[in-house]
Length: 96
Image (cartoon, rainbow, N blue to C red; front, side, top):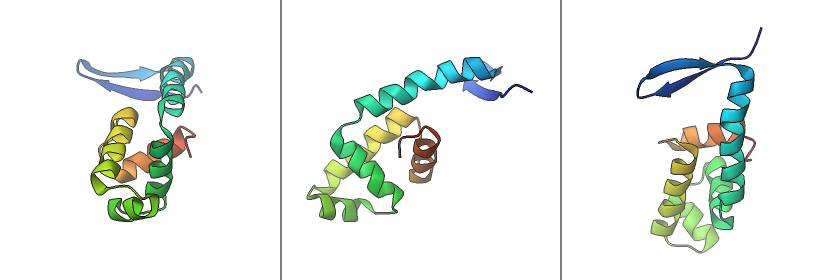
């Protein structure tokens, strides 16, 4: 049986077959891996460790607004709205 996934969009829902799914996810993963800045990668690693923005800022010698900026960019790039989703999607896409 072929692997399928659901794609949500404004016009409704459709099933993606395995080949279609691979080509729909692969470019996103490659873009994220190559477009993340070094600070974003480090912030992502620390978010996966359960660090708060304050702790990340302290350990990386950044301000909290800078950490929030990086976390927001990661949310946008991965299409998530919560830290737990960020970790889950990053693991699924092999970014960790």
